[in-house]
Image (cartoon, rainbow, N blue to C red; front, side):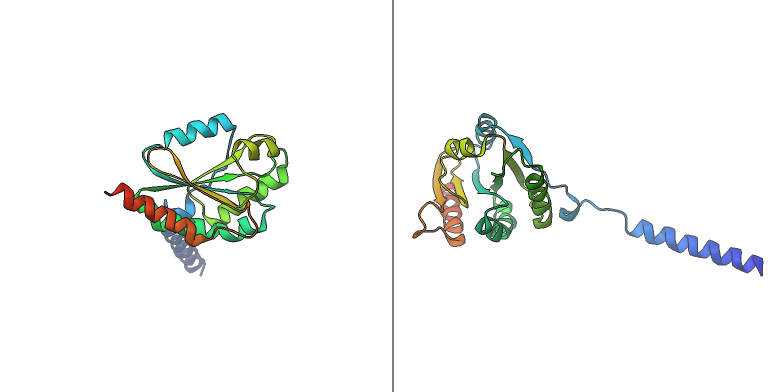
Length: 181
C-alpha cells in the first residue's frame, strides 16, 4: 500500500508541475508593468521634443478629478485603436508630488486601467505645474502634430463648453488625414 501512496504522490507532483509550466507568465499587455515617472517641466519639454515626428495625445489628469478618472478608460481605448496607426499616447498626472497616498492611488489606478503607454507625474508644485502646462483646470487633452506643434488644446476651462471624447478622436483623425497626404 505504501508503494501505491508513493506512486499517487508522484503522479500528483507531476500534475502540479505540468500545471505550473502551463501557467508560466507570458509577456502580454496584462503582465507589462505600468509606470508613473516623475518629470519636472523642463524634463517634460524634453520628453515631448523626443516624440517629434509623431502625433502625440497627452491626457492631463489627477486622481482627485472625478471627470478625469471617469474619462480615462476612453484614453486607453483610443490608445488601442490608434497606436497601431502610429499615434503616441501619454498621460500626465497632476496629483501633488508630496502626497504619497495620492501617488500610490494613481499608480494603482493606472495599473487597473492597463495604461501601458508612458505615464508621467508632474514633479512641480501643483499650482506651478498648472501654470507651466498652460492649464486652468483638468481634465485636459493636448494633441500635438508630427512637427511638434500643439494643434489642439481640449480643456475643461469653460464649464459651458466642455470637450468630449469625440473631440479628441476628431483631432486624432484630422492629424492622421493631414499626415497621410
